[in-house]
Length: 310
Image (tube, rainbow, N blue to C red):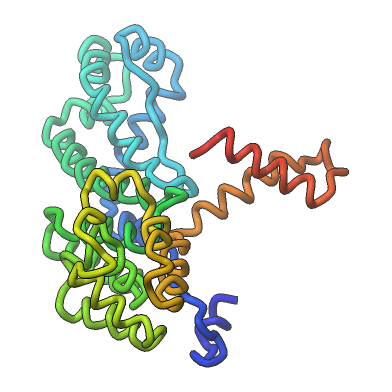
């Protein structure tokens, strides 16, 4: 279905915005910078202390907390795994020192290897930056402008040259003219941080989509009427969703301006929200409770999501 969509001509798609899931692309970047040897060795250590009775008992006796194993189908679990190893390293070292003669010597050597521990810590620092960005992008209210800001923030972090190149490649795959346009029209960002080329792409997208609204776009960027200075105060912007901010001037701008802002600021950055919704639907319409009508099930899902926000 995705391939068929990409093969459609622009006039067949109409004014529908199409873009990739940024959460998926950031997760792919985490795999791009994966250090397989470190991951493998840490997994062996954790499995040894989780699934062997004697080391497990001595580890708990030393005050060690739960160790986490990574799961390929759950994002950020590798970062959690490595972090649990680093945070409990002192307990692991204590067990290995006191019971060296009865433990697996390969495991003992790896645990007591200070250089290996430092490598794990450096790897955790990289993955934590990715994990934070991923958590932000997967939020229900993360729109295209927020997504662009998160990507830009991730790009500005310290990376090795080869890692930076891989991140830029993922960034280019994620970004579309709609992302840059949303970043320009979001009063929280005003297009700050975009390159000249990116700014031009965003403005050309707005001009081609709603040419009649361009006078309002220019007025907004110049902060002239009806976009008064008080509307750009940080404390006000923090309390107001960007779509509401634009609706507040709906009677003073071209109708096309409201259409494009409504479209840009209701488009979420990733498919995580809809995936969570499908998961909730499965919990409500279960095998035991399978006679619910579609309408009633949908209402119960809406209530469940409201009572259990992510």
